[in-house]
Image (cartoon, rainbow, N blue to C red; front, side, top):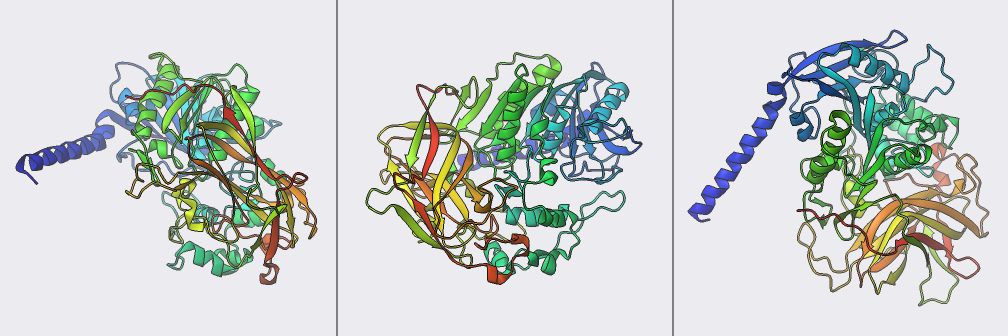
Length: 619
């Protein structure tokens, strides 16, 4: 390296280190910390930390986060490196408030997962709406120098609490941003997808989060230690789900026990869904999510849709980027998995969207020129704006699952629970939730498995699809139950130029765009499990989550169909039974047929954008 280059490198390094330390000290240098116990209407107190600007020359709006994940550090003179993941907001100066929700860490009361909304309000009853209302009411009356305006935000579980806050009804609450909010743990968020258990994620999350809390505390319980092997091997050797308690949880995880007793979409799960409750949303709302969020993509899209449907006059907007769970809050997202982006997408969001939203509604600063929907096209790698989502200028397209080279009326494969299809090629440690990069991973690693069907069509023009994807399969199985996984894939041509993030050529890359699983016994309703009749053709219908993707000319659209996605999701024994109590003998191979005839036309339906898309020019 030349001397001048060395000097330049050292200068850049010094600048980076100086900036890092400057940001680290920013909170302590500019904010003062106060700790309160705010009394709720039932007498319980919630531990609340307030960071107020040291500059008292003006008043400031309050930005509140309610969390089950701890508002540490707990010492009155201890400061975090950052209060919120958007340093722009810290520099703008808000009064930041972080609260341990009821029953977690230093807050009193009993914790309840996805605490149900009390529809018939008893004045003494409490839920997340009343706790939010009481908290806001106390803050605006007691925190010095506040402007009387309050905003809320949160990611993942705190996103759920922000969404609940949006309907609490307090007049001081002016802006709410639920980000990757949990919305329904059975239909499509962290715990279940369409009746299939999100195995690796739920097992790891609940093994710590589900440990019963005793008294007030400031630390997480110790994480269980599991064998140091790959997840695929670990969960396969664990066997039936009944072994989770017998080998590991020992009946000490209460919420796991509840999960095992509520394997259908009964009142237990319905009561924990936020989606029916978004009536009379008064604050402006900005729902944020990531196209590659393997946890709460469902929650973001469905929360936005529910607010939009029930509140025609509300200022409700949607932002979706090329991010994994919470990725928009990270310092730099200029790639995900193998795919490179032309700019730092997370920084763009924080600088030009989130900052603008809160500044306008809480400080009356600037202009609000955000579109109804700002979404990232995962094929062209550009943001685009829409007046509504899904967009109105679309036409329906039906892709029939038919391979032209065969004259058979069906495709078939043997699904064997002893050799389930892996969801990723990476080796994942047991104590990891899951491999986040699976959401756009190259699918060539399973392309030649005999238990994975492939249907593809070459595109002679550029095609942009937007919105939900509907799946309709006509199936015949030799067992009495089955899962069906359907994946939409963008196949790059062998002439594709460019390389992956790690430098491998993009030619023939099979980029996963969207995929999901459906537990077949729920084809007649999620609380109406029914066995399949072996040898009988039956229809299975479900939806994949929304997508916004442009297939470039010369690319292929591929659909893959399989019956396991392990250990992302649990194995279906393929015997109609209570899967949480299935015996090893219940796990049997099954012959599955997917019909492709005129009488039984298995197909995928999506919507294609007609006309031009308004892409946003990023400088």
